[in-house]
Amino acid sequence: PSGRTVLVTGGAGFIGSHLVDALVEDNAVRILDNFSSGTPDRVHPDATVFEGDIRDDATLSRAMDGVDLVFHEAALVSVQASVEEPKRSHSVNLEATLSLLECARREDARVVLASSAAIYGQPEYTPIDEGHPTEPSSPYGLEKLTIDRYARLYHELYGLETVALRYFNVYGPRQAGGDYSGVISIFLEQARNGEPITVNGDGTQTRDFVHISDVVQANLLAAQTESVGAAFNVGTGETVTIRELAETIRSVVGSDSEIVHRDPRPGDIEQSQAELSAIRSALGYEPTVTLADGLQTLVEAT
Ligand code: UD2
Picture 1 (tube, rainbow, N blue to C red):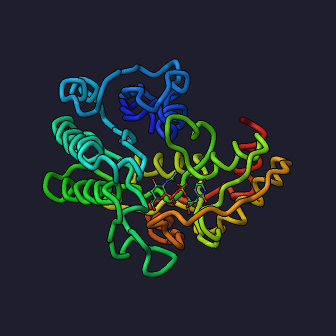
Picture 2 (picture 1 turned 60 degrees about the vertical axis):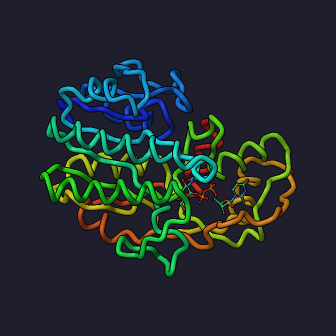
């Protein structure tokens, strides 16, 4: 997109801040963030900052005033926290998103929103296509499923241009921070500090790790597509076991950390892998960063 007024909610967070970086040159970019897990140092200096809680209607409404395009990345991203405090997570992840969709209706703004592979729950088969049954196993997953459906409904009922992107396991620079991190940033820190690398269970569980730059690519394509009212997986279609991941990170870092196995994490997904035909054909998305390259650059750059 270019020449647009764009709002990135969660623009001081991991995914949001990378999106802002990709947009500022050609667009008037605003961010809305309460800096609960996002940090000011991640915010591009050319972005206009609206500081506040996404649940606050006045703040949200001001940030949305006059926008053409919204990337909605603000959320409580910890699955565990949603299990502990479902009402809190519901209010941020679901209710605030509904308010945002209402504002978007008023502005007639396109909304690209962050959905999640968590909506599928324990997969019945892999690779997981968008038609896979949705049986979320956490409040977080249920909230993401609901906003993913609302996005489609807002298109059907009001003609709003919406696209939901179902992220698989996103990783890259700036992910660490706050009380929540993905496994890659946890293993990286452990390997660097020479601490034991903590694999949950036997480590045979698999994940589809997608580099942040490919997540940005998917968002930029979604901002332009004619395939609105739809939801797309965002991953690589490739998988790795968590045990292999631990070994790779140890060797890329050149660490002598030992790899230890802990009890399996309750409710942990066994196999995860994105099926990408839909996003390939509708958006022209093609993952560009292999896990090997992504890990290498992550280690070199951070
Ligand atoms: C990811 C998303 C989550 C949700 C979910 C949907 C991230 C960070 N989280 O959760 O938001 O969308 O997918 O299914 O992308 N592990 C270890 N040792 C550790 C930490 C983790 O072995 O110290 C394992 C963990 O048990 C799991 C795998 O690594 O098997 C990935 O864990 P995660 O927390 O990074 O992400 P995941 O897939 O649970």
